[in-house]
Amino acid sequence: MKNIILIGFMGVGKGSVAREVIKHSEYIALDTDDLIESMENRKIKKIFQEDGEKYFRNIEKKVAHWLKTSIKNTLISTGGGFFKQKGIKDVGIIVLLDSPFEEIIKRIKEHPNAVKKIKKRPLLNDMRLAKKLYDERRPEYLEVADVVIDVTNKSAYDCAKELLKKVKEHA
Ligand code: S3P
Image (cartoon, rainbow, N blue to C red):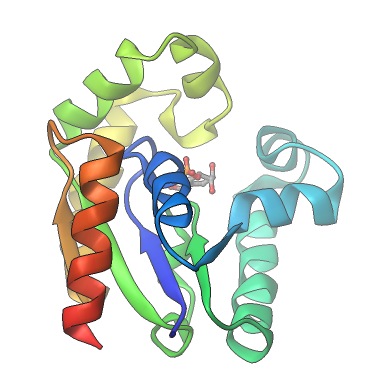
């Protein structure tokens, strides 16, 4: 079993799909944002506020190196910008969760904790800039992905099933 690296834009549902995958497979899961928050003992939002995005990307770099050298048989959920880390292709199979920007925002807004979900993501606070970031990143996500899953209007369970099937076919 190779690692699976889940990539995709903020709010696309990486966490929800990861939880379903581990329920229905032998994989265990890691989340790069959770790792960073425990390394730093502060929230991502605080890290951005206090030390800026560049500082955050440097910690992502450390995490990417650690994943590459030390982690196996794991489903790794990543923050929306993690895919840019060099060497990510060597960590495992890259699975992109894909959906149009409007659908992603709709999904977040329908969540009972919508305000909190938006507030905790510094790069989602300005919707115009977030859309710009999405448009820049979408082709880059597609370029790096080994497997693409269109998650629009699908349950996390259905996405997880599709993911496991496609990863098996890819191996
Ligand atoms: C980021 C996405 C966030 C988090 C940070 C930066 C990004 O993770 O890593 O706020 O650059 O897209 P989620 O994709 O889990 O929201």
